[in-house]
Length: 370
Image (cartoon, rainbow, N blue to C red; front, side, top):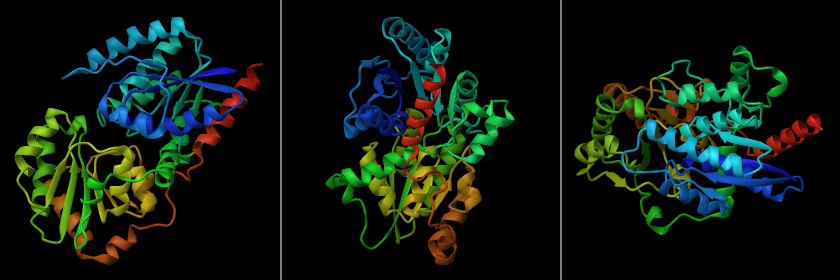
């Protein structure tokens, strides 16, 4: 029985690791060993609870106003201890969080093989998103197994010199989780009440570190203008970071058509996605998830590492310019044909079978090492 380590630091980590953890638990060959860094505490715990994941070790590193230096230092200390104490045959990390990068680095120091889920995503700008872009580049360089979700992300890896025999295109595990949640959970009643019967729901999220300051304010001012319409309700689960929460409360706090709510459980976010007329977001995961519900995505970033949505027409890249945001949202609200153009039958990011493909690749990896 091989011990497979899985790192969970943030809510996206847990969402995209959950189907792999569940699949490993059913395997006759592998045993999952789940490590929670708790880079984000409450948001992470919500997902762990929904999927019923059994966490073996919890570093519980989160503190108020933490920065990247603190997160990195605490993770190195904790990872060194656990890798000294616990036999890990393969360490799986997800995406581009600081938790994933530091864990992969520590595994490399101990000569433990690393598998990178969601490998190969790129903007080719080291500050957009920050620090995620270089985190994922470093993880890809360290990894022995790379699981890009799409052919585009695979080609990025090949261009960067990764040997093709290390690469397995799997689709995105976030779509596996999405399908599991739709099948196995129900939203909370207070979330159901947020969905209007006679208005169009716009789900809005904004939290990216590189947008803090003037760009966040521009986005909020655009949302404020859109909220003057009487045919929309905008639901915004506000990220707890004060760089987001303070301007959100100041600019959007007293608007009738804007519902500022605390971060919601993953199952509730899935429900809101399924009921939305438009999604306005700077989130990476939501870019992937919304097309499964045929919900158009307007991306509040200058660059995206997920261009497949733009290429297939299910998403548009708006940036943070106030006037452009207002123009594009208004166009989709007023012109049904334009919105219809963004609705496709197939989600370009995955089919819900990624975790099974990853397990098969891991089996092949260990067979080659016998």
